[in-house]
Image 1 (cartoon, rainbow, N blue to C red):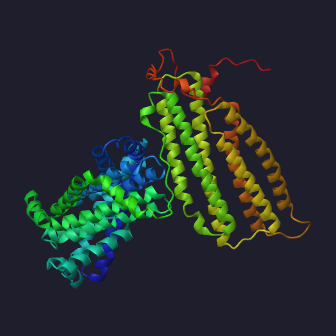
Image 2: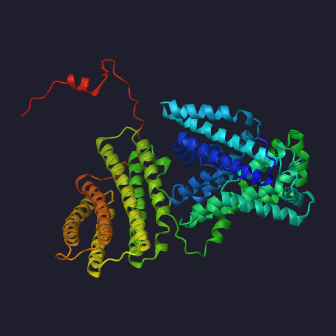
Image 3: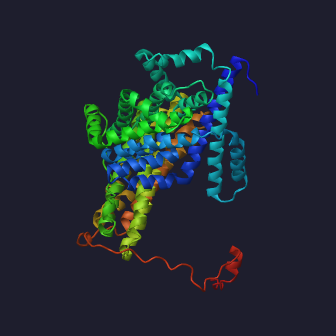
Length: 588
């Protein structure tokens, strides 16, 4: 395609950028589907030393990119799974990983973009295995990414000699401080708006391939601005989090800002070293992009504790809540009794977050202040993260040789963690419903609202009683469970009476159906919360939740691995065939 019109070239350039961003998004999605869950566990295990944490961050971000990796790390910090000290090296290393994926992009293989797209589409359409379909998504992402690069090159050809492009490149070419800062700030803004440093890097690669950029040094302020602008996604992820979450985000910003300062000072050294590696300007840009982040990690990693202390100092006078750290210590796994006690404590921590969420949601419901719901989604993600980590930890305990009592407790604890997570989902629903109620200007009659508040207060009492029963002492757990079930019966009676009254209305008087439906949805959400609390309370009442202090230090070996399929096991083709070979039991 020959693009002679400059205005049309700008449209094609925007389309090329859109293709590149879509490719990055699909590539990241495919990689997260393939390795995302394992990567979360990997990050959790690789934080025992700063060097291993940085390596883990680099490995993770090379697969799922810096933004998603740092967001995952912030989620771990917000859930108390990682401490700030553990998270900082991972955040440092994550800045290296994305530059490694850009090294692949720098290879001139755009001519194969359609073949890559075709292969990816075929796998997505015809592959039966999930892993192959995810591989297809990765290939489609790569194909779109390279197609986007080729499109931007095509669009830049008629724009290369235009005034705006030459003026932009000239800002740094004349080596003025003001020009350098203007380019850097513009790059920060563009990256923050698009939430991807890939926009800037793809444009630089295209201009270098066309000869618009003949000296890699021209790209330095663009790249440094892209690194700083990529922190925007991290800062957005920190909103609604606690103090430790904000501190981790601040550390990410500090790393890239200080890294930009150090790189600016080292420009003469880069001018000497980078051209020695290759004559290709595109590869020189990619090499600087990687080398700058590697040098930053090497320089700053020994001072990671200072970064943490400075971030703590910046947030010391704020009202941000402090997060309680996780009790799931991997060192306890060889002592199952101690590990089970840690799980119970972790459940209480998870339940405490859910309890605070409920109170915030009810505050927002009565005050109509939507800001009170702002932190609910972040807290709900923390509850989800704790549940996933708890389930993984329980599975690792189950690998040990356990007595029946311990095995039964693990089953109850796994169910309890899932129930608490589901309660968090329904608490979040209160926020969604309240925001919609405000948006649609829906009001409840005073009598109905008063009854709803009394019903909500009873839910709070049931939750308080049930969650206080999460104790490793059978008498305490059983008493709280019994009390919670009594309160639940009161709730059922009140909820039934309230729903019947609201549904029946007053005689033949016409009712506002929308208002009635919104009111009943509130009651339904409260019923769902109480239903999960009932499941918890029954286990507290009936199960023996007892940790024996005498066995806390007892080490148990790993259980022998299953022997596999028995030789006499008979495989059936269908469910009906298997049933036909079972001797029918006599009907009574």
